[in-house]
Structures are given as C-alpha cells and as structure tokens.
Length: 130
Image (cartoon, rainbow, N blue to C red; front, side, top):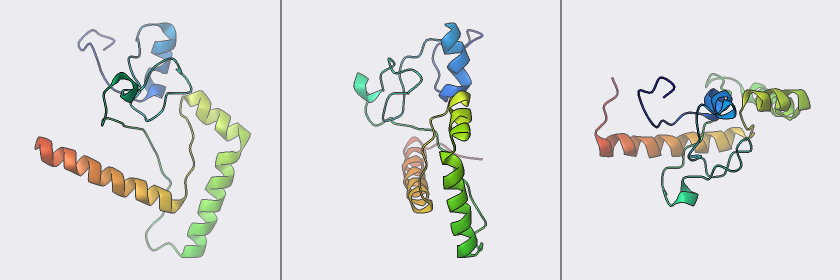
C-alpha cells in the first residue's frame, strides 16, 4: 500500500498505527466487533453495513498437553497476574494492542470457534493450504 501497488489492505493496527498517525494511510474500517480504542472515530465494518466479516487479532500462552494440572493452574494464575500489572498493560498499549485476558477454557472455545469458522471459509472458497 505504501508503495502504491495496492489501494486497500487489511492488517493489525499496531503495524499501521504509525502510518495512520502520520497521515500516510487512512483507516476505513475496523474489522473487530467494536471500535478501536486507538482510533475511536473509525467505524467497524458492521457499522457500515458489512456484516459477517468480523476479525480480531488474538494471542495465547500455551503449554504442552501433558503439563500437570497444578503447573497449568500456576502458569495461568501468573499470566493473569502479570497481565494486570500497570507497566505490562502500558507496554502492550504502547505497542498498539488492546489487552484482553481470558481463561484457558475461554481461549480453547475461541480457538475451536476460529478453527470452525476459517475451515468453512477454506472449504467454501476452495482455498488449498500447502
């Protein structure tokens, strides 16, 4: 986009945030289910009448499947504690991400939902992954 080879693209806000702030890129829509805290004047796709294209960026912390339950519980508690630290939240915010913490069960449900959703897209569009 910056080189003029494509007029429109979709990417996570942290990557383009400096360009938006500088005015070299103009955001048209947010693909998440809600507006971005960084650009609250930019409407979501759904607000513009484009439904069914909600996409959000997420990350998770994982352990090996055979990790003992007490260790998984300790790791989850520590990640939760760390995510609440003001300096960590500020650092994540500075990078351009909007931190949202969930439990292991919520992350697992999200992953199942995302797998089902994108598998359907791949099947319907006949996209092949090599």
